[in-house]
Length: 421
Image (cartoon, rainbow, N blue to C red):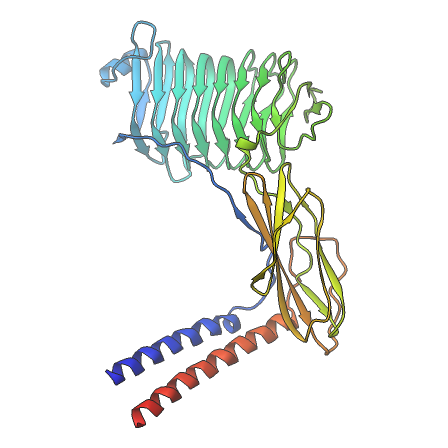
């Protein structure tokens, strides 16, 4: 039994030593951004799924010959429902049809290749309650007429979430479109008289909604438009309306005062913009990242200042070396943490900022106090970056390794002493 305990303790100690050694094996090259973000996004659930190969419909008769049942309306046409299709090809490809059809409750995915749903020269179709992810494009509709794209969840596609090319009388409503590699919804090549309402579009790599040239006379209102990396929306078309008589769209960057000008050559304006509803706020506050290593002589004083923002600010918590201070109310402005009379050593200042929807973001600043003269941090306005190198980190690595090595030796000596008794 004693030999077994000794073996277990030695194995534990060796693991600790190996973990500590990682600090020496991996060079410290700086971290672009150590902010941590926690958000909750409810993905659409599709129940009672059946695996199915890729579907190709090239005429109205193909619906019937492939055994698809009604009802897609107008005297009970065709229905494609409840399939999971995983392929590097086009999951559902429909061309040259006039029959009414509906595609609903399907999960369409593939290894970032192909299109989820591709429609060309098609009319009278409805795409509803589908989840489309990890394709090149989620939905691509070309030369289509009188269709509805509603309540789909479209995300993690390499290019656009929804691409509409030469579409007329297309109703795009209630979709959740996010984290696609280019635009959320892209409309171009002579599309007109379309309606976009109640779509939740956010976190795409280019724009949320884009109207390119020759896309005219469309109506957009009640869309929830949050952050995308290039911009929230762009309109290069003509005579597109971004509001109805008393209701525009919800904008994450709207201050609550005045109109919302839309980027692009069209000169479009949302004359009735609205604040992003709190119920749709899945976005954490934004926060900058002060320099991680501040060097001072002992007993010196200093202040760390974070610049944070959120439409719905709530509170913040400061944690110093693992000790949490009481939370403080936050009005959306800068947050500061002062210190004085610190002994020589390395100190961890972590700020956690919450909004009213309990989304949060955190940032950590290391304060290194030493009597040894060190070069001052480089003067720069760049945020979200830790200076490369750093004597404090190197010394911290050595301390961890030494402590772990001492722990190994201590455990071994204790067990040897027990056995000798």
